[in-house]
Image (cartoon, rainbow, N blue to C red; front, side):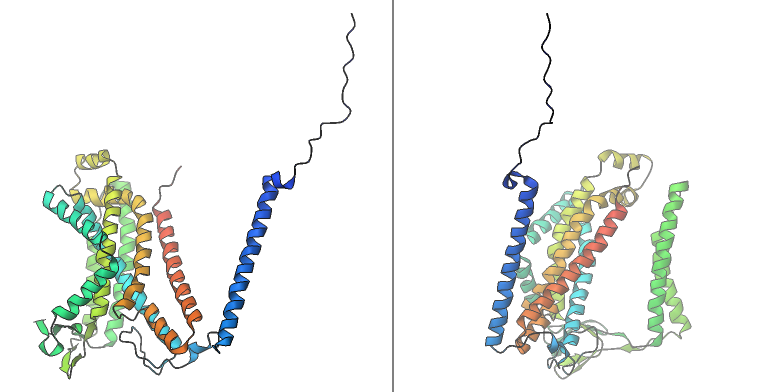
Length: 399
């Protein structure tokens, strides 16, 4: 019996062509092109419509107004400023005021939030309940209402400058703010500042060396106490060699206000307190969650080898908790910086307030709003880049 020869196809199997609307790769390209054309059309429509409206109302465009005289005063400024300066100088003053309240607020928020978060986990019933009550209260009151509350406290509860409270010599408290004496300007002060900065750098180097020494030998080096001593001793040494200048700029009542010294305005104080108390409540919960993420067994092991509670917190808990704390903490730092724009509600001259005044005087609303967007975008991206770098530095490196 003979088998039939098999028939082998001379040509390979060719699948039929797939229509482009069924090909996911081609369909994705089409969708992207359509979306790009739609965005371009909407952008062109908005731009052309805005240009037409500005021309119809005879409103000039561009940033040429920045070089003109501002013509308005600003109550608080970190740099020399007067009404005769340009708009760009006024905007710089507002940006510096925003940086000032944001930086100080972030420092105080981290300190207060860390303390409250640790207190939330305290074995003492009263301390834990007080911390929990603070968190619940501050988180559920809008930050704008808190700003109004503190602003009203300063203006309604404190007397006028003529009846100012004088708790200490050279310190006055009234509805114009906290006024206190400061050392008169002297050449030694700048050198003392550099000495303080040098002490911080030396302390940072000692801390890193102490950590490596501890990892190698197990011996703890008191880097924090040594750093604090250096921060006091080095500026004091400069002050002594400079002749121990002791002249003070003491505030004095002249007319309806104080002259001399340094004044912390009610607007700045209200804004700072509102931002710090509000944001610290969220930071406290972040710290609590970070601490609870550390295994209980590690805490017990640290206590078993004789570490004190403070050493357990500093050497075992916080270094590991930081890896959980840093990402959400970055978000809260950004929130505090952006919430500082609410300063306009209580009259603090931040960047938004100064820009609004500029818009009212020049009519350059589009340029002003664009500047606000760009400045806060710069603040947010700069802070995010720094915190992302620090987060990567603290992350565990897998081997």
